[in-house]
Image (tube, rainbow, N blue to C red; front, side, top):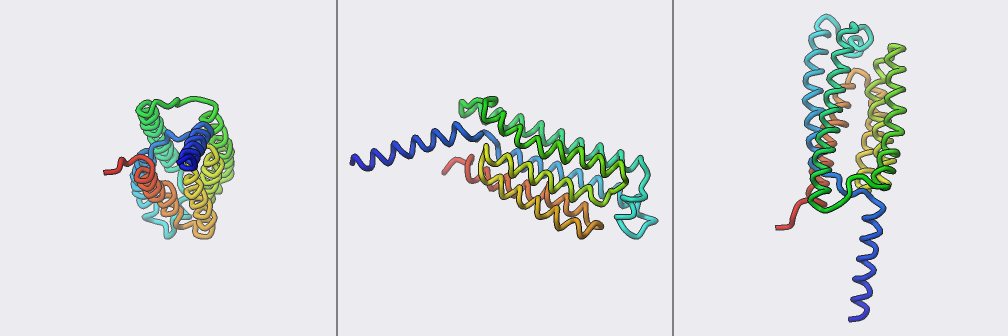
Length: 211
């Protein structure tokens, strides 16, 4: 009996230490919503590209020779997806934290934000440089690669499962460098499909109440 009590105490201590060093208020549903936003954005972007490509044979030619108006439209679509995804994630995470009586902003969440933001900001600046130099074909691979790196770094301060999504996007970005004509498909898979699968996995693993 004493051994069992000792093991339970150790388990509780380990759980408390893990909770204090990791931000565990992320909602899996946020990933599902982010994936849905990305797929909707990709559908709109695909429609715009198909119109522009009506007189061109390859999508890569559209990205290289497309007018500035098209580039601006694609930028605003990506921005809208980002704002919706972040807004939904903040709302659902805040709701989950309040429901579980957890702090939304502490030293752990600060470290998480820093480690996630650093690769993401660097990637954003790099993508702007690509746009400046007309290297449109590398935009999607760069987005996926830097986003993957951001997730890998952030996983140290939240669920370790996030690392799998990070490596998936990282590898997907590297592969997409060899298939520039299918950039939109890779973008949809990385930011859309894999986010939805990851969100469902996280929800069932950590949030779904046992029946």
